[in-house]
Length: 214
Figure 1 (cartoon, one colour):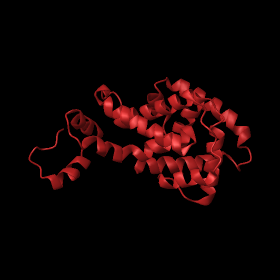
Figure 2 (cartoon, one colour; figure 1 turned 90 degrees about the horizontal axis):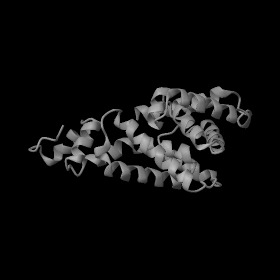
Figure 3 (spheres, one colour; figure 1 turned 135 degrees about the horizontal axis):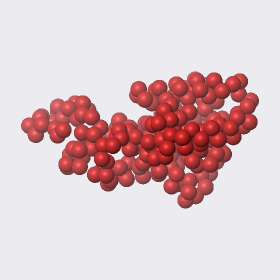
Figure 4 (spheres, helix red, strand yellow; figure 1 turned 180 degrees about the vertical axis):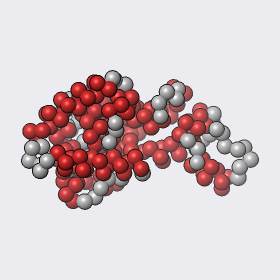
């Protein structure tokens, strides 16, 4: 769907914001200079949250999101509508994160206040108790192999279904289940000092709901 050619400039942002993601991509490919900016506005917080959880480093996460949006901007014509635009974008940002982890070891974040500040900028819960648990989970996630970490970030931290995570990572649903199971088994002794797994579930569910509804 293209914007009406005679729509007044003041009305165009409102019209654009009412378009679907797929329509915005179509308009971007067709030369609309503002369509992709609307896509960025809609999805940057979610992509930032995925990148931050996957990489555990705010600077690396910011770079990964930038790389992902540049890639999406340039490869918009590759979108075939076989999955939601959100899934397509998250696949790109996860791949950008995995590329960064493969190219170099992501340094541990020594300054906890830096991560806390980064998470306050994202649409995350700000309760102290939940943030403390979240920090510990983030640190533990960095000990996992990349494929297990990516699966757990999507399913346990972002609230994706196994099927949606499989579409993002382009692997069978059974592979996601297996990676999550192995990852959780490795995390269990590391996070055993938490009261119970409901702490993680409570934090993850709250974040997933905020990011899906935001």
